[in-house]
Image 1 (cartoon, rainbow, N blue to C red):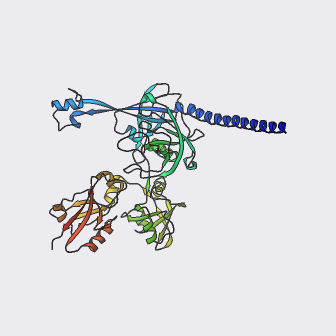
Image 2 (cartoon, helix red, strand yellow):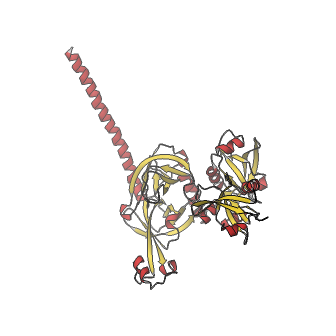
Image 3 (cartoon, helix red, strand yellow):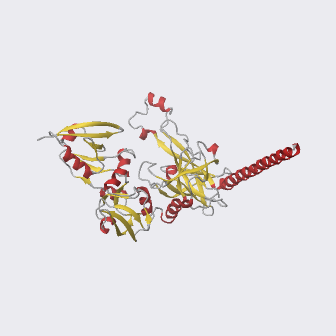
Length: 471
């Protein structure tokens, strides 16, 4: 009896020890795989050092250069010019030709670019092409025998997968820092303010200032993203556990255009679109909140020529279901111009197929002039729908909603009240307005006793303003 118990105890002890050995073996394999990826990737990741000449007499032209307080605060006794330095990362994507991909914001508006390799060798770099709309740039160095990196398919990436980030956070002395995490989400947008095409991979791998332009790798060691941004606050610029990378498939296309043409060829439909919230979905009797609502159609643009109307809900483009506003924007922009595509919309509760010929995206000056404004009204102002360009121009946050004031008539009630171009009108009375058409309708509905109350935002400060109209 005792022997049987001893044998049973010995049996379970052996199983436990075997399990520990097996577990350690798996952990060792897992650890070795990460180490192998880092060892292979590091030679293809570079540190980018930039310099910019800053003329103090221009930067502070309103302050006399012989002013003692000026020299004290800026610690530049007699110096009228100094060099501003910055740090970033990059990835070699063609070792034979010396092409390097990085972020546009790393090399934008700089005078000198130096690329430092893993072996500390340094090379002067030239810019092949830049694309602020995707925040990508291609550099080139004159070097031979460079290690490069292969692209993976970012569309195949799944939430929860392990990823590895490589770059130079904070300092060149911390170059080729390797961190690991998982894919937290895909298809993130509205992260960077401005006119930027966003389809970010979100990860919790530690990414910090200096990592911009560095590599995000999958468990096979393939490049599946270029690290670009972090979520932080105004008090602490370090990592908060949320980083964002441009997906490899977008990088490949932008890189190819920059090398071939020096710019990115994009298409457009010619519509202003907005997300579909719960209220809009109910009002339009939509079963899903996916798709994009057409808020306005640009005059003489591809959409107007094809018959797209304000109020249409775009649910499908070129046999691809539209998930969101950013998804449609990115899909259209990456499609070839001067070709016909099927656009599926919901109009008056029914599906309708529209064939639209995409055109090449015009310059910013054309896009800005195509934004329709509401003619000057009894308040003496013009208002326009918010766009990425107007948000950037007037410093309006990505989450703010309303209409922006684009013109104020001299001597009008609005001018006398202090309303300025760039002010954001979020409400008429107590009701929200998001389009010039809504603003006009609410203005007519809420006018009582020759008075109108507007809710405005300027430089982050909000207030109600009551305007007394003249008879």
